[in-house]
Structure formats: C-alpha cells, structure tokens
Amino acid sequence: MFSYEKMLQYPVNIKNPNPKYAQIVLEQYGGPDGELGASLRYLSQRFSMPCPELKGLLTDIGTEELGHLEMIGAIVYQLTRNLSVEEIKKGGFDAYFVNHTTGVYPAGANGMPFNAGSLASKGDVITDLHENMAAEQKARTTYDNILRLVDDPDVRDAIKFLREREIVHYQRFGEGLRIATDKLNEKNFYAFNPSFDTRCNRKMR
Picture 1 (spheres, one colour):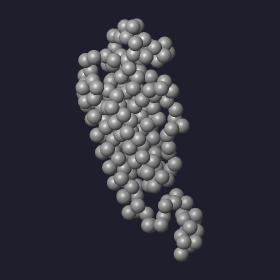
Picture 2 (cartoon, rainbow, N blue to C red):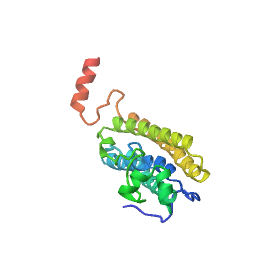
Picture 3 (cartoon, helix red, strand yellow):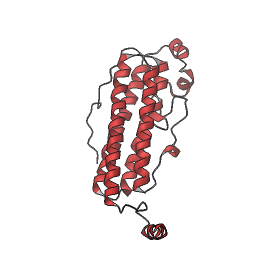
C-alpha cells in the first residue's frame, strides 16, 4: 500500500511555455528509458527478489520513480499550457496536438507510444540488478541530452534534480548487487536453478 503526499518530490514552476521543450522532455515520460518504464520495471522485479533487503530496495526506488513520472508530467503540462495554434505549429507540436491536444500522454519524443516491451523482469537477481544499473545510466544519459538541448532555467532546475536521482539509484542498485553476491555462493549465478548450477560447478572443477 502506498502513502501519497499531495506535493511533487521537487517543485516544478515553469514560467515560459515552450512546445518544443515539452516534446523533448516527453521522452522521459513514455520513452523506453523513461520514468514510467522504470517504475513498472522495479515494482515488477521486486516480487522475485530473494531477500527482504532487495525487495525493499526495488519497492523504494520503484515508488520514487512514480514520483519522478509525476514531475515529468508536470513539466510537460506547464510547458504546453495556454499555447496558441501558431505556437503549436511553430514549435513542431502539431502532430502530438492533433491526437492528444495538450493532454499528457505516455509517448517518447518521437511520438512513439510507451511499449512494455522495453521492460526487463527476468526473475534472476543478478540479471535484474545489472539491468537496473544499466537502465539508470541510460536515463542519466537522456537527462544529459535534455540539458544540452534546453536552456530554460526553470526546466533545467527540475531536470538536474532528476538526473542526480538517477545517479543515486545506480549507486543503490550497485549496493544491492553486492548484497546479492555476498549471499550467494561465489559461483552460484543461477540462484533459482540449483541443479543446473551444480552441473556448471562440476564442469568448472
């Protein structure tokens, strides 16, 4: 059960609407490395984590990613509020507008709707934690690219906060990987298939 605080994790106060920036930032709402995918990935993986510390880690970060999704939605909404038709056309936001007006919709910057095929949940603790570390770095790279393209200080302030959290999550998943490997036999990378692992170890001797 989640406890919802009716405030953003970090404030979003954008004074100047900009449809081009909205289209760019939208990548982190419904893109393959965005916040929606991150939250679903971690909150799905948590069920098969083999120890309480790792279940808690995935729940904590997955829940925080939902808060980040809320922030990205707020950024996109504030960047597109009260736009004129001319501003929409000039900003290249017309293809999005014709389908969604200025409603916040889970799609990437290229207009591709969110696809759960970008998620990974293998049920293997080592595989999933490595996947998550890579996912956090891909998200960090996307935020770096957004910062290269957007010069509005109000947008940049919120994006910098989100970028920093990706780095923290990467570090926490690294700690989780160390917990997992400490609890496993050093050769046991198949925690859920002991008979296969035994055969592998025998061949290696």
